[in-house]
Image 1 (tube, rainbow, N blue to C red):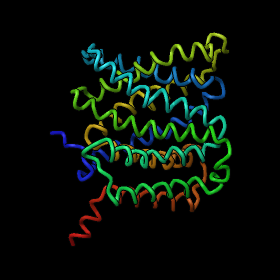
Image 2 (cartoon, one colour):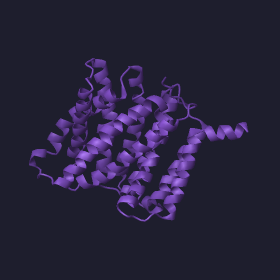
Image 3 (cartoon, one colour):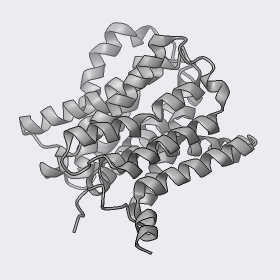
Image 4 (cartoon, helix red, strand yellow):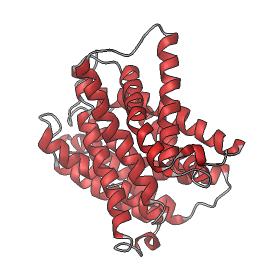
Length: 308
């Protein structure tokens, strides 16, 4: 039986495992995008990301004998979700990172749980703001800032438009998490929801990429770029969004937003394991703060201590 997603219903081991896996998939997206952006313009990258992901998920649905629904109300929801969860944030972040450093972008993107807590409080009846949730969000933001380093904040206020773009992406992600709750009530399975939203995103982006990037005029990318695009589509989008909607269904919007705290940890650990980058004391301290934030937002330990 699926548990209701409420702030007093902590995530179980399955949800935490899925959340950690999702953070790895989305943490890797920054690496793949960094390769692709050297050869392709932003709208083309985002279009290839969601377009290939849509083809992959449509093939998986077909393999299991399923298809996308045809009801107009469901497609209206798919287009709304695609706009909030893919088109708007992907384009804003890619454009923003052409103007500001990735460290500052990571901090601004990590405000997503804060916006989600606020939005969920006013827009839902089940996920009301609590003191431990708000405290956890602020501790988590501090951990991200510490991990990335205070130098990332040095340019705060410069390139104002680019910083607003990344903040806008964080707000869009928060609203998407609230909006996406409706698919459970509509009886749409996570796989179908993921497929529908990336398909709708593709349809939105095709005319935008054609008008702005004119992709037929671009030089053919090399194999490394195509490999990065494929990984971005298959792992960081197709698989990631299946997990995303699974977590949203069982754990709720606020818990799902915690992934933005875990993404910097994933990116730093991947850099250390794959690229041989050195872990510093600030990284361990930041991870500890984020761990404390997750405990605070989860709430179980504090309730046990109060009951003792």
